[in-house]
Length: 273
Image (tube, rainbow, N blue to C red):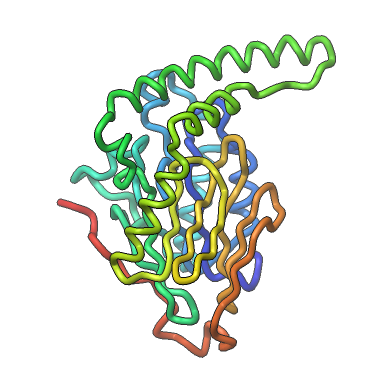
């Protein structure tokens, strides 16, 4: 148990993809016991599982740990993404997990954050879903080639290389996806009178503190091992590979216990029947 952790936000673990860091994610969850845990989309990669079933023991361990946390009082919130959009359908709900397209999380100082995966606000994803699926299929074939290449490199005592990630980042930069995506989400939070937004989708751990709007992308558990951590005193920390890479302070000096009405997030747009 790690004391002092109020909330954890993780996204894009893509359980089912061969490069998913299942063992690292399981170790991370076993070291944490937050009040609130947000799974910010693409937690399960349904697309990959349909094409090529891949489910190591660590994945089962992750779900067992989630249920253990739930039994110990952690509230678990799941915002589906494009790779696990099947959970947006009126299917049987996961026991002990609240599912919605978005949530409103209230920080200790009263500031409110929109929590959503981001694909529903991605213009490319929204208009060209077929392109996203083709791109995902091709990326997984590139991963297969990358894994085979690394197998050979290790045989010769050489370090592995992950050109698959470089190809994905380069393609998104060429499309201008990162900049447009950030601007769209920041504007969405501002238009709704909120103080910030927490998202995933583009696999890029990033925290931007604007004058009025906080933008946080929780990153991923493929190339990165990143998460947004909210401490009991209200501070936010963006972690990657166990290290804090950015911080955002809390306006209030009061401890979380002194603001009980802010201790639980409120729901917005509940699971659609």
